Length: 103
Image (cartoon, rainbow, N blue to C red; front, side, top):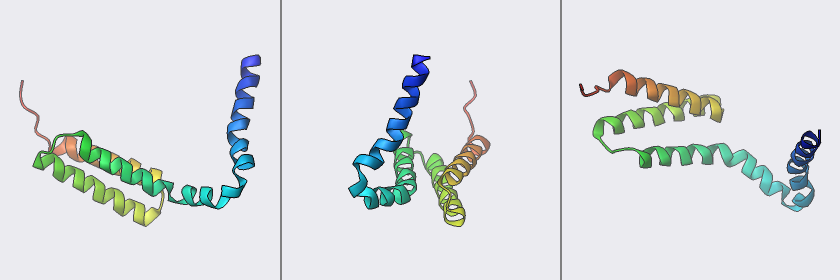
């Protein structure tokens, strides 16, 4: 029972203390809340180009996935929706058109 009580107190503290102690920075926090999805998309895009090899075929698939993600984000303005569908379409393109070497 004490574990549940401590978890509830920690949850309430993480939710309310920033608003109590950072009240004078409220407009900055609202700005971060509004701009964070765009920052998240940029970070994921940069990681996507950094993490893999740079063959021309895979690079073309990545650019297609990024363009689809941007298009979905511009239409619906929902970051999770655009990330999800961009990732799904990228994975579908890679799995459909990549020829695996025979072993």
